[in-house]
Image 1 (cartoon, rainbow, N blue to C red):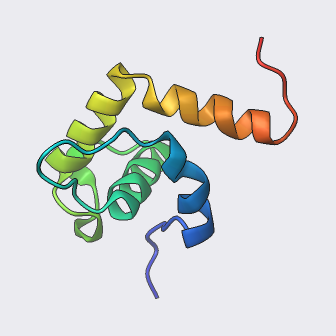
Image 2: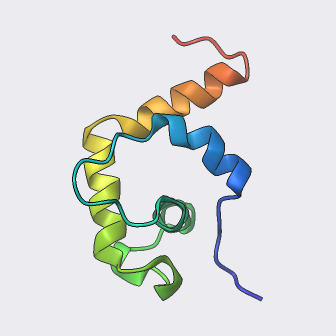
Length: 89
């Protein structure tokens, strides 16, 4: 049994509308990378301590950094909160 965290297909379906369009080369598996980012943040780990099951730690960090700077994660949170009837401040 694995102790790794994995987003479900249902969770990915709710998140995917917030993903930016891929330009040129296809992105590395979104489910694997996002699950890894959540695992790292949830457990307070350093990027280089990411379990191998999530792929290279540099990929996790790069996606987190790039999407954070573009506000992707913030839009995800606002969008998910709005789905549940919470009003934006």
